[in-house]
Length: 136
Image 1 (tube, one colour):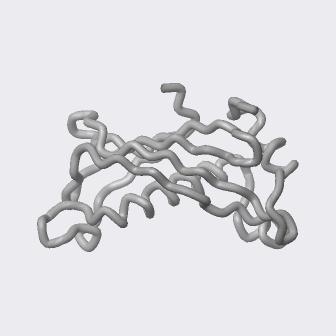
Image 2 (image 1 turned 30 degrees about the vertical axis):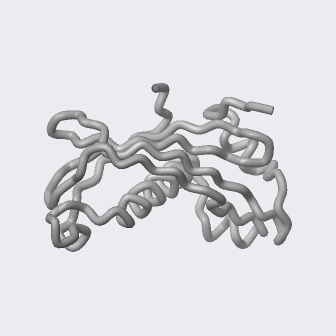
């Protein structure tokens, strides 16, 4: 894969369930944190976007769980993205650092509300241009 962003992280004790593995809902937090850090790396903040009337929102998430993470595991969350119509689609994979095993494979479809209406964001198109593969 041609990942455009990587973020190392570590599992915290409270993210695990009674089975001693990361609770499935926490993977969405990892994926979201990665997208937010990616956006931040481009020089954009969600607060400033909102002030400008641009609100990116998740429309759909598909996650496939492959290998569980446990407390203290270090992992790397990676992503690449495409544009499909008005959607920005993030392909996100999480890998356990100790053995590079795939933990989660996810596809996250996002859309933008611009001044409250669903539509294209010229700002995102400009910011993401170096990273996007555009599919019409």
